[in-house]
Structure formats: structure tokens, C-alpha cells
Image (cartoon, rainbow, N blue to C red):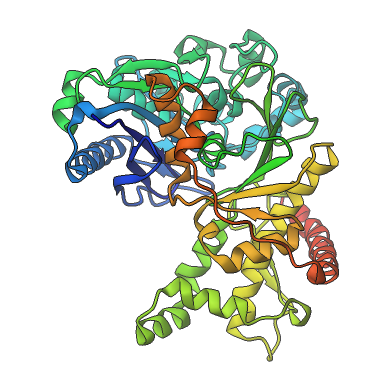
Length: 504
């Protein structure tokens, strides 16, 4: 009997359940619609926790039925999701509040409070990263300060993926990468810290934290009889601890080699590599796949999400043309982008539709528009602006002494040859894609395969299941143009910081 694996990638916009064979081929998949609530206040980004589970059940059942394989052939399940944000339940596992997405920034006042009282730097020293409002510690403190009745009912604290694992198995558990990357324990001891919880001001919740699995491949529980009945899965199917989506994308693209970065151009602008060092002032230094190594990250809260915003609000012209020609809407957008020569480009785009960003008050904007500006100019500016925010972070990692020879690009925009070429030219390194549209789900499935014994190691899994595409090579003739435009883009954002400062 052939072996199959499930990878669940729970994202900010939708969650996907994907069944792979052991060679990385997608057998079937199903996706949830968006679950985002209408904002109940400035900075709130919430979702319905109960609805999430109902939709995941439906998607698992749909994927299993459509796969036309026996449930017993599914050897393991891995779950990944964005880090940060928050899900918590009551003392008996019941829902008591909406979940928070990682782009929730209601707790900006909490961050300001930590800074004023002198605890902010102390927290960063323990977690080896840069704390922001969308992380679970500040959000939990916000509940303590603003919704105390709910806070006092909290019995279990989880990440988005951990809630799905909890519902699949009945076990309250998480992995080191996702929980450590969300700044919930001491990165030196790899364990919970009384001091950290005291600094957060949530010391009474330490006992509500999940069990920490030592590796992403550790089996934390098995599918319960009730879940098997609801989903069509086999009772007892192992569920592994998994990892944050950014590490899952790295695994799903096989990017564990030296001098290889992974860039995720999705809801977030993620840029990452691994080393045996903790990098000062990095966005985060997370636990990696192997003991003694760290996932060194530099990121902000928007990359492809800028393009999604543009597509939803300013792309009717492209939609109308696509319908007339009976082609993909994104094909038309790519054509508009490709029609602009970088040396002729004037419009600049600041890609800050979401927090956290380069400034707590940063917002997206177009600059240098005049009567001669075309729709193509706007399309191109968005793509170029997204490449520049990745360069901003990639340069940080390079300047920290982490060598770079190639970038594995994942996320929705990675499917575009036009975007790949712009990224290659701006970042001035080869861009390597992966022949899989669900890289994060594949990474979590690989972890499940190792935990279940389908693969003996990550190297064996990569050889079997990860298929890279030919590299997109940078055009060296464009380097002077992009160097000049990036310097201008940087200068404009420095000027805007003066305005953003005044908005406090």
C-alpha cells in the first residue's frame, strides 16, 4: 500500500488541507473561505474559533473523499500556521473569545507601556527578538487590562495551528519553533520562564501554556474516535507537533542548505535563514529543526498582501480585460507589470498595508503620480515595492554576516515569472522556486512523514518530495537602476517616518 500524508496550512486568509503522496505530489486538497470578522475597533483582526474548526472538519472530509484512497493509507498529519496572534480556550476547552490574527495590533498601548516601564528591552533579551503588538504576550496582557472577565476564564493558550491539533487529538501541545518564535519562552533554556511571564504581566497564565514538543516531528497525539467519525480519517492517525508556516515553507522548499535564504512573499514579508548564532535586533531568532541552531528572521507584516489589497480595490481594469480575452486576471496584471521598464519608472509604492511594519504608524501609499501616470505604472510600483521591502530585510541578514547565494521564493506571488525576475534583479541573486503550489502544507506533511517513519530524515524527504524549478537569474544590467531606485525608496520612507512620528 502506498503512503500518504496530510499537511494542513492554516493561514491569515484561508486554511488548506492537502493530501500528498510520499513523493510530494498533491492528491487532493480543500480550502476554507476567509473567516475574518468585521473589525470591532482600531487594530482588531479577529476570527471565529468555532467556525474555524467546523471549516477544517469539512475540508478534511472533502480532501479524504476526493483522494479516493483508504484512510488507513494516511500515515500522519502535520499542521502549520502563522505564528503570533492568539487562540485561547476556557478551563474545559470551551471557546470564550474570538481568535486573533498575527496582524492584530490592538495591543500597541501595551507595547508602549512595556517601553515606558523599562520591561520592553528585558523581554526582547529573553526571547531574542523584537516584540510587537500582534504577539500572544501583549495580547494576553491587553485582555487582562481591558477584558478582565474573559482573561480570568482562560484555561489554555495556543497558536492557530495548536488549536487545530487540540481539536484533532484532545492534547494541548505546541512546538518549540512556533511558540518560541511567538516569544512565549526563554530562547536560551528552551522552556517557560517565570521572569518572562512576570515581565509580560501575565504570570498567572503560565500553567495555561501548552506542552512543548522538542521537535516538529514529535507525535503529540492521535486522531480521536470523534474526529475520525466527523472527518473520515482513521482513528489513531498520528499528529505531529509541526512548526510555524515560515519554517514549513523553508522545509517544503528544501532550503536547509548553507548560504540559502527563504523568502515568503505572502500575507507577511518573511526573510529567513539558519545559523548557529542569535542575531542581535533580528525580528526573531527561532528554534530551528536541529538543536543548537536558530532560524534567523527579518520580517514585516505585509508582502503579497499588498498585491491582494491592490487586486481587490484597484484592479477592475485588469479584470475587465481578462474577461474580454478569457484569460487569467493575474496574467493581465503580469503583462501590465512587464510592460514597464525600470529605468523609465517614476511611481514609488510603500508596501505597508498591514502591521507590524518599519514604523508602528506606517501606512501604504503611492508617490510621484502625475497626469502621465498609467495603470501599468501603478501595477509595476506595487511589485517593485514588495521586492524592496524584502531587500530591506535581506540586507539586514546579509549585514549580520549570514552569507547568501540563492533565495527560495514561496508564497502566492512566487508563481509569477514576472515577479520572480523583479525579485532576482532587486535582490541580485538567483531566485529558485518549488514545483508545488502548497509549499507550507508540504513542509508540514514532510514533518508528519518523518514522525510517522515514512521518511528516515529531512534529506531523504527532500530527495523524494521536493522538486525545485530552474533558477531565475538576475539581469546584471538592471542593478544600477534598482540600486538608485531603492535608495530613493528608502529616502522617501525615512522622510515619511517624520510624519508617522507625529501620529502618535
